[in-house]
Amino acid sequence: MVRMSERAHELHVADYAQPPHEVLPEPGESAFAWARAHPGEWQYLVDPRSDRSKRTNANIMGGRRADDNGGFDEVWLNPEFVPTAEWVGKTLSNGFETVMWMAEVGFASVGQFIDAFAQNEFIVVMPADDPNGQRGLPVLRRGDQDPEGFVEVYSSSAVLPRNTNPWLRHPISGRSLINYLEGNPRRWVTLNPYSKGGVYMALMGCDVARWWREWTEVHPDLVAPWLRGT
Image 1: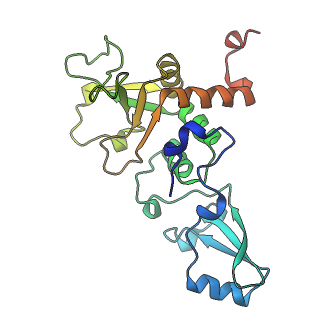
Image 2: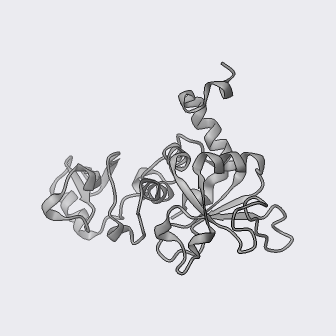
Image 3: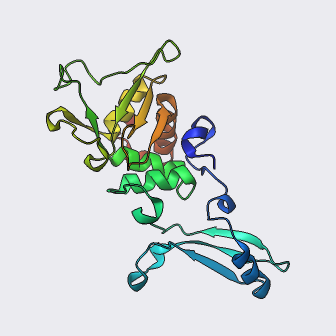
């Protein structure tokens, strides 16, 4: 599976990381047997780790329509689907982390991702000799192939590495992070780099900035009037 972060340079806010038929779990022999017995009908897939006694529409991943040849000819993804952390196998402690995973695999669009990104509050772990960030965000580099370096951020306290010094945690809003990346388009931002349970993602600043620009062109109300020139 090719994930959103691997195709970031070619994606726009209306795009999804995968076509719908590649997002749902691949059908097995039992699914094809069902299709042969139910031509023209829809087979719906439910998050297998959801609570059976409390299932709602949000637990339905989507569905496949059986064709006349024992296969499937159409796929539907449920726009209201919310995965369980147990099924995903990742920490999903807030709305952004849920959207982040969904965008990576194709359940959510790039636009939904950047909108959630802008609304999230991230955490930067500052160096011990600059706990208040007087030097700005810490920029890390790995060799000559990465001249602009990268910044590391975490999507919530739940995905911070163990034993992180609480005095070194520096909050930064999603919009502030976007503004920073707009000014540093060749710099990478890595999300949850050392988290055992968090969703990991690495994006170049120019892609984050471009997505936000595209999103605010569609939703100009997200930009303050004085920034719109009105």
